[in-house]
Length: 123
Image (cartoon, rainbow, N blue to C red; front, side, top):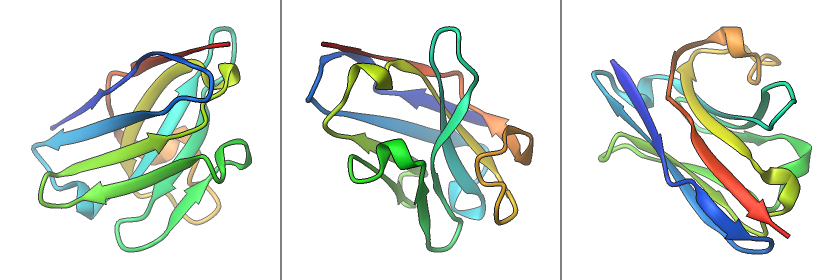
C-alpha cells in the first residue's frame, strides 16, 4: 500500500501547479483523500478533501484557487493550484482515510500518507 505525491516545484507568484497523488495497492476511490501542507515552522494544515463518493472541500485560504479531483481509471487524485501566493509555500502531502464529517482535516483520521512534495512560490 503506497501513496506517491508528485508535481511540486519552484514557481512565481500567480502561476499554477498541479500535484498528483497516485495510489498503489488499494483503490483511491474507496477512501476520502485529503491534501495537507506544512510550511516551515508551522503546523500541518488541511488544504482540500475529496470524498469517496461526491463532494469536495477546501480550507478558506485556497477556495477559488485550488481544485481537487480524482481520476478513478488512473487511481490518482490531483490538486490543481492556481494563482499561487508566497504563503502557499509548503510541503504538500496527500493522505487516504475515512474521516468523519467535521474532521476532514484531522490528520489522525487518515490511514495512509504520501511522502510529500515541496511547492515553493517566489514573490
